Length: 139
Image 1 (cartoon, rainbow, N blue to C red):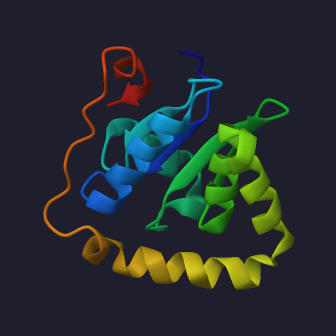
Image 2 (cartoon, rainbow, N blue to C red):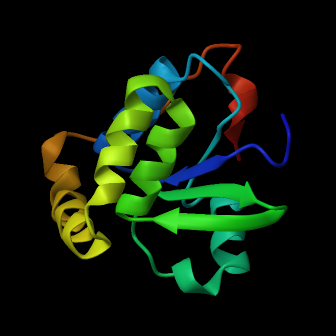
């Protein structure tokens, strides 16, 4: 797995977030290169240490590379990055979302983020990857 492959940092203690990871794994039919790390993992902490601007962001982080530079997107921009990565109809959804100003997108994202633990009741279920997907999970 390439170090330049995109990385999704997610809340490993949130059922909604772990279901989101499963959704991405299920719909990632083109590239199958994205990596995943729980926020509390060593890889998740390392991203937040390298990027002071996201240290306190309680959100998905989509980490990719632009012209060899690591870029971290969060809030609605992270969702757009994921949609672009997935391609196909999801890329169209991302393109349409990008037409909305961030000042309109982010409040909607933050509302869902605030109630995400209530959307999927119970404890977070671990993401149990298939053998092919296990190399994409980072500790």
